[in-house]
Length: 263
Image 1: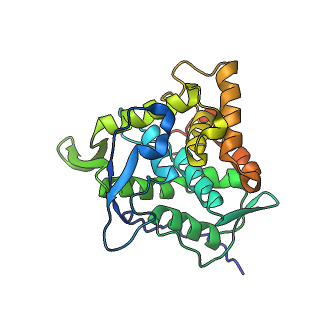
Image 2: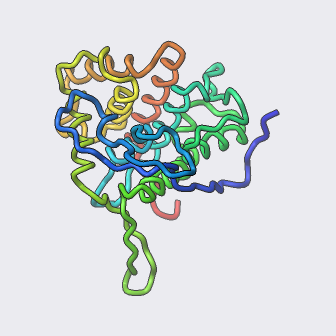
């Protein structure tokens, strides 16, 4: 029986297993998954040796706001939900995100943290999970990227007194490469049916969130049609409704103004 997690929002993020080094890929249509690949692996194991970064990690970098020093937590959470659904670890039960096995693990700290949170919480619809405690998943993914050397944590003091940490890309070229590849998929001539499923999900979810990195000039009818085709590519039959729910939730979140401080 699933018990409801009502009082504790604590999550224990830990660095992602495996040390990945980004490789710049010049040809955009080849897909996002070639942009950030692992070249070495630690003895702890990891999601996939020599594999790409997770879907939420790529979305985090794609959405990274260098002025604010962070990305959008709902988008990162949506990416984690989509990856768990694509792996078959979360399924749709009449609109509710439901774990297949309460003991399942991926080896990825951020994904496992979310899987545990869903397992121990009251049942919620997919769109609810996009924003509910989304900061937990975002923080876990950010720490993974720091551990891998993709982001750098810079400590300083505000007014010389209050400690603060600012996160910046360790290599801005890596983030630019990811964005160029994402836009290449969105604007390119490669048929959506030939785009890798995970890469299609990155673009479809990012577009739903209204990322300026993807849509600097907005989305016209042609791009909107392309996004819909990529969304269909990202959603195999068992996950079609899930991806649709996630995209709807992201669009709503992007249009909702943030609460004022202290609210």
